Image (cartoon, rainbow, N blue to C red; front, side, top):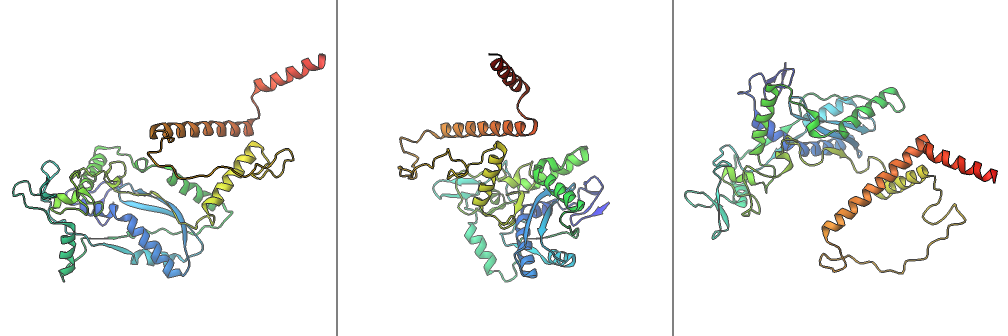
Length: 361
């Protein structure tokens, strides 16, 4: 049994006492976990005094709480990593959500004349987002609606390049990078399924941003409110059952992790394809005397407008792009297969027969 900040859990990740488990806090922690990670990297860079570079992925644990696996370039004492993680927190200064005044089945109503969301019975406009924030600023006893922190399970290990441990670490991190969030957990028992359902129910009514429709459930109009909002049915990624609160990008890589720009990566990809195909000619025609450098372009390029008559419909452009990508992928797989196994047997046999026949003639 593990004692988490939400309540004790069993070995299968389910709470010992589901009625005492703090699902609301678990949902808010999951929604704001990306901001906590950003704050951690800011604090770590300020602590060590250099631009720490990282690469990793975020996924839910067996108890469905988010956690992260990261590789960090450089040498940092483990004590420093633990101290920075313990000192990192993120405060959420949003309007209070202690009482849910409405439900998804009986939500507030949109009033066309007032251009605002109103109470379905009294027709009184709900508190606007600006007024709700002003109330926080003028309250000397105001507290953040939520504070998210890391747990005490910080496992930091050093890895030396060129060792078996380094290869094992690369395989370990790659496994999490290539997985989907829904593949990280499987509800195999009714108890696990019930635990997942309870957390998802709280995530459905948890606001994910200042423009989330779920604010209407608490009597507050979100920022830039409009008539198409559906409280309790926000389409944000954090509310989906497959993500369980882990929104945004699940794979996180710092800008300078590889030490190369996007143009450098594209050039490396081109060189890899040329080497695979056995092509030794670059874009300027160097390396092959039979290739002549192309003349300068005689065309003037300009950005096409959506209403331009020369621009095909969007559906046609998407289908053409998909077809092109599919053809490129098939050609690349065929080239890789030839590089590993050589040309197909029937082609080799046919060429040998033609050579023999030509010799007899």
